[in-house]
Image (cartoon, rainbow, N blue to C red; front, side):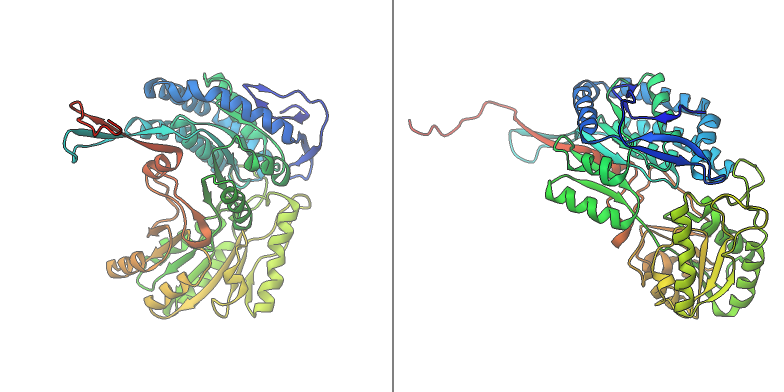
Length: 488
């Protein structure tokens, strides 16, 4: 499938394996070794930054049309290799193949979408001051340090890279050390599609080694990070100390509100998808399911019954709905929240064991608990796994209050048949995205990001342009000026 040792990819070519720290990459479905990852040290990161800085003038100075032709070619090439990329992603993430095939194609489409966005950017001009024209242009910011997570590598790494290079920047990309294979192949394919050397440099390694070297380097002009809130805090502290802008898409503990007047069958389908898809490992999971009291007993019973029938198994099987968690330490962390739930006084409704017939792999049965109140730790801390927590509410105002009683504010789901309820929730919930009567839906051109500890900044068309470009104001007199002549 891949070479036994995977290295970085700098200036368009894989780095030679000349020793260094090796990290085992494990298949979470079998617990077998897939390959070793050679970690990039600070010196290798510096080499990658030099490559990106050398490539920046030509890439930034290229016409938008020519740059976009390359981005369109990348999209076409990644689409043609989507099945190959999906297989590599499944081997290290354990995500079910059906979902990963969709994400692989979504990764390709990110490059086309942001090429189209870049082609629509326009400047501004002003003529308020007599005899002057003032105009505003956008310029690429420089070299970015882009850091992608392990839970959806292709989709999220491609988003970080596409938004960065579409506006004329160059970058370093660091994927998670747990899930490097699909990203390595993606960057190879980008170069095969015609991406100039140095525009995207892949550096592999752990966050506290390779990632730390990236974000502290004075050759970096901006930082883009998708991942956990605690890591985001550390990155933001470093970025602030070095006066580097950062865009952070972080965690969530999002509410899925089920009103009594909703289409309860559709709400049930949506709630199950919201927490259990992607093996429950997604920042926008609807992990707090708030159900109106008059329908709570039946809705929760139906949810639990369905959760028990979810097909768990080999992620390469098209029948599988939930695969293993991404790595052993994460599985153990998710299971540790069973003890948290018990100490909270929550009722375990289902799950937590190892599925029958699956003796190997980081599998768990999907979990659901009923919390006594939203103040319980299980309602406040991000689990990042197939772990649903139910809270019962009485009136819609209670649901809004509970939804906002969180350190996070990434998304919210609302299931209701009432326009009034929908609008109350849209206005009242403090979250970056509100999905009404639908599971997760990403419009790439719309802003996406969170309130509070769910992030800083927004991805999306205008939002990404604002982050990845600098605005420059130029003023020119129309007629020669009659200036005061000092000293005459």
